[in-house]
Length: 533
Image 1 (cartoon, rainbow, N blue to C red):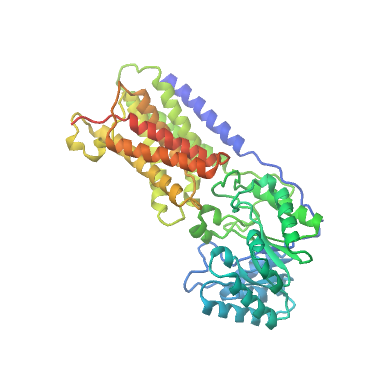
Image 2: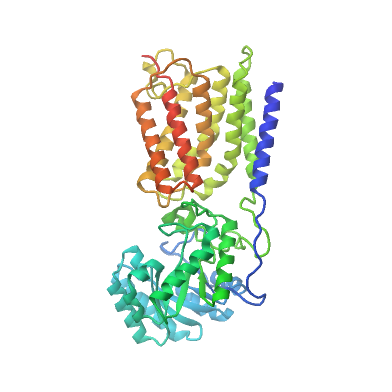
């Protein structure tokens, strides 16, 4: 008992120390322009939490938009919109009240009838608010999405240019402008998107300044004498890594600071993406899609302030507390399993401590990620199941470890009547092993066949995988012969791990961590004892 209390105290202290370190604020540079200056422009969409552009019958009152624009007017001189239809079409009218200029967007896609309505609505707005709307952006990444050909875009550009006296342009990622330079002659200026996180070769946040200067040099050489607007540039504050590109509040602050400073130094026109988090984008782009805003969608407050330190884990005390609580439950299960039994071997105590530490370090993160991640179709139920496993598996494994059990194979859970010598408790542990393997395989196959927007749920898997591995290798007795189901599961997990590391790159520590968990789980299921019978 005393030994377990000492181990728990050490584990709890380690959990608290790690989260305290992770929660330390990172320095943010002071605002790189004058105190009376503002950001040139910022992308704005009027959708709050629970609202989306594809929601049928959505009603957004003027007061909601006005509240946003009043707040943005203190930080920016201009807002960029992406559509002239629906409530986005009201932005220009309301922006005029707050002294904001507007880069009016015209959304173009495959549907020609919708394109026609967009163009007519935008031209009507341009005539109604000529002092507010400063330019028309005819299409946004239609080439990138593959919804229009360059020739189609040019036809729309030429029509808008003929029918309006306002400057007009087309917006797309900078590589597509280099691939389609013929569009430049149909525009008054070139609008490029520089999104280092999303590029085919993702760029780390600390390298954004060098990368942006290189892009502007290349685009400037391709279009000499043509004005260039950086129509989108920014960084997400949460979500999955892409190679070394890590979304976080501190990296978002770093990127925005670097961009504003470079724009000031070079005289570039820049539009930051975006004003507020748009959580509906998580349905399309995963967690990261909903966290590009400088303002939090729920609190409507800035995520960081220039010159003030920002923490990547401001809720570190909550995460540490949840982790310590989970570790306590693991030790309680371990003690319950050991009660009434002869003195256990010393090596089981470090095993229990390992389970408690792995669970405690990651359970708080898994809990706070539950609401943020798993927005993509089919992932919600899996996320809830994995969160439940993140606590139940370590507790059950700690109990089994104290009892000195071996890790039972899949058959004990899948076909218990035909497994001689099986017990109810053994069947429960086997069921938890099967559930963990199925959840891991579901994650792994998603990251193999459709990885772009998928998160890496390493936090939810760390505790269960560690716990099962401890039971499997400490409780092992003699040479085992794994069953066909275990071999198949291990093969899928190990093969997926190799692919994920190769696809995501060694610099992506989230992918590396998850891949290691897949390998550990593969070795664990191979160690599970195939039940006789």
